Structure formats: C-alpha cells, structure tokens
Image (cartoon, rainbow, N blue to C red; front, side, top):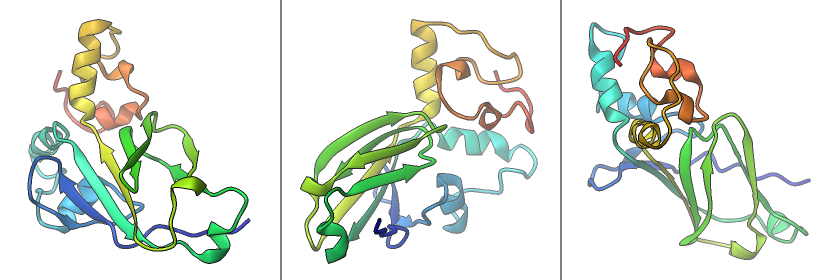
Length: 171
C-alpha cells in the first residue's frame, strides 16, 4: 500500500464571504479562526456564545495537489477521510464525490478515475451543524438533554460539542 498525505496547502473560507485564511489539516474551524485572529478565545467569559454563533456558517476547506506516479498507477486509489466533523460535501476536481453526515467514522472513496497527475483540487464544505439540528428537530423532535442545544440527538456529532460538559446551558 502506498500513501500520500494531503495535509498541506489548505485554505479556509466562510461560504458566501471573501475571507480566505490559511488552514491546518488535520485541525478545526475554530483552531484556524483563532490562529487567524478571526475569533476571540471561546473559554474567556461568555465568548462561548460568540463561538457558537460561528457554527451558523458553512465553511469551505480547499487545497490543490499533485499525485505521485506510484499512487496514480495503483489498482485503486482511495481518498481516506478521518474525523470529518460532521455534515460535509467532498468535491474532487469539480465533481461532488460524496456527502457525509457522521463524525464518528472513517470515510473512504475510490477516486482513481477522478485524479490527474498535477493540479488536482480537493474541496470539503462543512455545513452548519446548528442550522441542521434546528431543521431536523422541526421534522422529528428527539428530545435529549436540557443541558444542550435543542435537536442535538439528530446529528452524529460528539454530544459534548454542544456545551453540556463544559459550558452553560443555552437551550
């Protein structure tokens, strides 16, 4: 098995805005926004609410890469995504190859036929988890905890990310 990591050259953009910043992969939207000075420390006073409001946005990660010849000449080429959090579309060279909706698993996609030797573009658009759970809760109210956001059981995302283990209730 041959492996080619795609950890470098990433950029982050808030969808619908012209605010591209350097991104770290693996990493997180919050980490990249903090590093770029685009958000305040979420652990300071009531900044948790400002941080939470950022999750009402969609975010696009993108990079350009070349493929090593030994990888491209393999029988199969898998794009392996570990820890995609949570609702995302994956676009390779302008073609949507997948939509994912579960942060608790690893995703693999055969992309051999979609790759070229140079100038490949990979884009991952993360959709707002807060908007998603609100929409899903209207369809099917799942209850949950009074200490977390309404609708959180409708999403395969670590429930501690909804503030019940470290923050104040904001239901």
